[in-house]
Length: 294
Ligand code: NAP
View 1: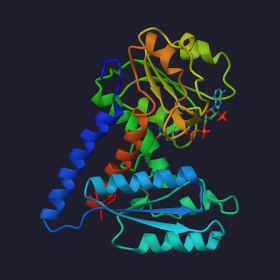
View 2 (view 1 turned 180 degrees about the horizontal axis):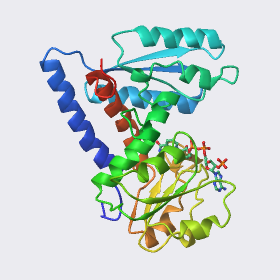
View 3 (view 1 turned 90 degrees about the vertical axis):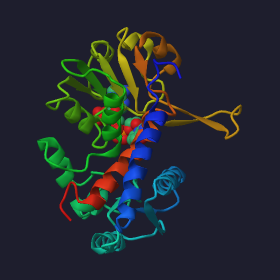
View 4 (view 1 turned 60 degrees about the horizontal axis):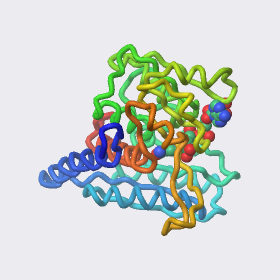
């Protein structure tokens, strides 16, 4: 692959090898393989695909996975009972609740019932608060994966201007916090739907991170020549010429932005595979008691 492309797939394969070696070592020492559980409610196609790929990734590194599939009609009380069951099951090291949940269930209430030591998605208030303070915690998978990708691709961050497009709790906000931390030392601007002069701000970025959920939003005129561009967006676009009938595209107009950027993540094959591998890293940490003592 040309060296302008930040190859998330290759980096994630390397990390998977490292995780697999650690898991094999645990098993050799008579320690149970890390166990990740997932709860999926209803029949959402994208959620099913995500859970299936997380399950596959677990198996590829020798971890145990289990999936709890609940019907769309599941009540909030039943969800909270499920969370309590998973909190108390000593064989499960970490688990995720695949979002979104059906509208009649209060997502915040369910997420915050997860025991922080098993919250490998890093979505509870406890882990989010600890992340902000720089205390040991589980960092949400996508921002964590991007940080790992930036480090392993040799992208310089100290003193650089970073512009994050998007302020969601799972991507934009944690991304901004992580990039401004001591040791990373970037100067961060976070943009959202009420930002004025967004293209002008984006053009100041040495590192531009797009997480807004609008396909092809970032065009070449919004990118400073030589900038590093990280595309978080995932959009399934109908495409009759592809065997699957669709193709996956990002928040960045890849073909045009490629011409001006010094480095860029492709979609697919950029941030996506790093997200899954980060979840595996968090599960390994949970099993080893590295974040919260066992
Ligand atoms: P989200 O919760 O919908 O948040 C989108 C953010 O973008 C919001 O902060 C919103 O601003 C801002 N925004 C929307 N339209 C805008 C505009 N025209 N100008 C400026 N800002 C705008 O999305 P998300 O969960 O962060 O996800 C973002 C994208 O990443 C989606 O495509 C999602 O599928 C993808 N994603 C990928 C991965 C992965 O593994 N690669 C993981 C998670 C998400 P307001 O706050 O003002 O509304």
